[in-house]
Length: 445
Image 1 (cartoon, rainbow, N blue to C red):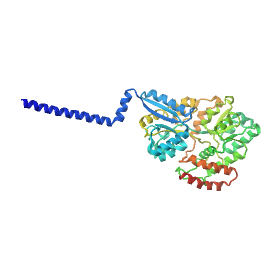
Image 2: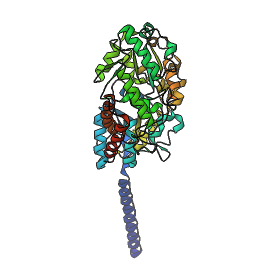
Image 3: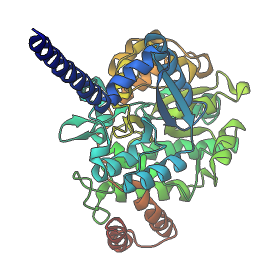
Image 4: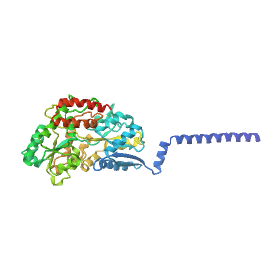
């Protein structure tokens, strides 16, 4: 009997050892999954998951990001969204350095990137950006905006502000020159220059500003003709024999030679020119509206017409774009799922958010369904009751799609010099042929 009791004790001891071993083993496995399990436990203990957004412009993009943050945090009590203001040049520099070195510490989960730059990132660092195809389709947005956000048919960005171009003009000055609002419709650059000469003659006011160091006007003229500095592949340089580029530079030279422009050299001078009544029109992106309406003494004296087309180019239309950006998720920072969810529930779908931003920051959304918002059909008192957003939405749908390629700003740094040489009298064909080689060498680096 004593022997039997001893045997039972040994069996019990073995079972106990086995159970303890299993328990210990499970505990080790649990530690191995600590990212997920620990995260859930942390949230249940009151600590929130934090995602960070980087953007620039306190009066525009940051306002939008903070409104989206407020909406998302109300719906997701366990998430904290940190919106960080940073100069665009600093964002570009930090992304370049960190992505090149695969060092993700300190990078945001969501970042705003300008349309002219994003193809460079997606081509160089494709594995660092989250696929957003599950929360957005290209057909949800203005067609000219989504080309830069896609790689192999997948959406990697949520288009944000449109940048649709318009001709903002002073009705009082145009009328003093003998023209009407009807004359500003279906406008060509030749007609624009004709009106500008009369405005200068009758009022002494220049028609528009030009900054010799900024060829954004040529960029907009190019897109109005469905062309760019590179071919459809985004890589082949097309400076030489580029008809749209040649036509655009000719228009630019006509503007300078006609004596109807006021030269500026920076943003403050540019805004000051129309706020002080020194120019009669501003042909640029729709994002300029908040700056125009700062001059309250000019309320009711402005209207907006479609962007001029180039009469020499049969592909040019009365629609173009200037600037614009999109939201992107950096998937290796650590909160990809939450960051994607944030964009899906805000900038990729929320029409109420877009409608509020239309009134709060004059955002012209690229989300097609946003135009159903009440602010898109409301008149604007500063612009004489014009239904500004309805017109922006109409022109938005007509902007030709182009591939901005990888190096827009690098190319323009070189082409600014070429344009000034041609304006100064250099042969246009020879100059463009010479700069073809220079640009090819620059983008190959």
